[in-house]
Amino acid sequence: MLNISFIGSGNVATHLANALKAASHNIVEVWSRNPEHAKRLAREVGAGTVEYIRELRKVDVIIAAVSDDALTAVSHLIEPAQLLVHTSGSVPLEALSTGRRGVFYPLQTFTRDKAVDMRNVPVCIEAGDELDEALLRNAAESISDAVHVISSEQRKHLHLAAVFACNFSNHLYRIAELILQDQDMELDLLKPLILETALKVQDLSPREAQTGPARRGDTHVLNSHLHLLKDPELRAMYGDFSERIIKDHDHL
Amino acid sequence: MLNISFIGSGNVATHLANALKAASHNIVEVWSRNPEHAKRLAREVGAGTVEYIRELRKVDVIIAAVSDDALTAVSHLIEPAQLLVHTSGSVPLEALSTGRRGVFYPLQTFTRDKAVDMRNVPVCIEAGDELDEALLRNAAESISDAVHVISSEQRKHLHLAAVFACNFSNHLYRIAELILQDQDMELDLLKPLILETALKVQDLSPREAQTGPARRGDTHVLNSHLHLLKDPELRAMYGDFSERIIKDHDHL
Image (cartoon, rainbow over all chains, first blue to last red):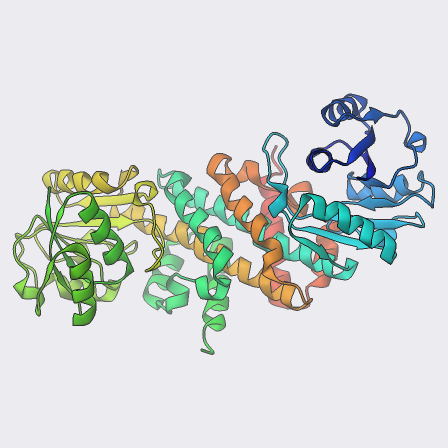
């Protein structure tokens, strides 16, 4: 059982605090720029609140779940001997100024009112020394079955990969929606296929799971699709993706 | 209860024949280029086989689930008075030469040994006249809760949209995998996030569901990601997607 305090009261802080509380840790205090939000989260997890970050009591670990830009400034307000961790995919460990520092990065999109089963959420940890790494590993393993020690350099690439796999995929759904709406159809038509596409790569490698005209080398369909696309940007994107897929399956 | 025969014995034919059989239709005969495959499917659904397409008996509807290229040739072997439908996303109704013709297009990726709950699979139908449309609607509604009458023109765009939303998303998973492997990490790290991204748009519009540095206008992360990408193709793709996402959220 660890004593844990939070800086921040947004989605990440809320999900982590609740999961850690449910795993029998003691959530001691919450600070947030917005005192109302701090109070709400504190009530949820049986914690207190403080008005100033400097007032946070000494605990086993303080988790700072605030915007990337604010992390360094926040860390200057914490005693160097206090273990401070952040939850960001893109900020290096060194951005924190405390002597004891770490990262506790849950790889999931959190939406406030949507429960997430944290046991399946990968948690990437990093720490300045072995003892703090063990402490963070304990905390992470108490809420997740997928705990990974990931360096700052790896984490940057992991975040980049997530942008491709998730943020850009979501934008492809948006493009599909626009193509459909233009012809009086709804994205509903594609929702089962979108879900199946994501489910498929849970078991198969994306290369094995690849389907479609480019995968089959069906130039007839490829050309007719290029012909349908009036927007030059989308036409270029269609061509680039298709070429990449063809190349990826060329050397069989 | 309809009498239905199949030309083709691949994944689409197998899933449709089994679903229609389970919905109490009578699967009469199966023809396939590969006689062994025809026999296997015929056994599964209690049908007979024929050696030549011309030998297929008169039934309520023949479903031709073969490659796009073969459809026109196949249709020339069928009596004009026999209703013939194809299952393709990209072939117009007119590609079939029979007097009575239609489309029965299930919008899902089928993998042979993976059961699919057909009730959630959208089935897009189209027919040359009202009576055949009613017949196809009956057949479709007996296996699916999402039956849509879609014109050939709409269907072309639907297929195009599916390529963006599914085939290209899958390739983004592949790109993510390559970025991770380059840093000794596995795609496993991103699988829950990939699934959540597809689940999110089942309820939210893709525009509402959009997250990530481009959505937030976080130029610091955008620049550091561009800097990480050594492959000029991927750098260009990252820039294009990010610009499109920024534009899509600019006019708030």
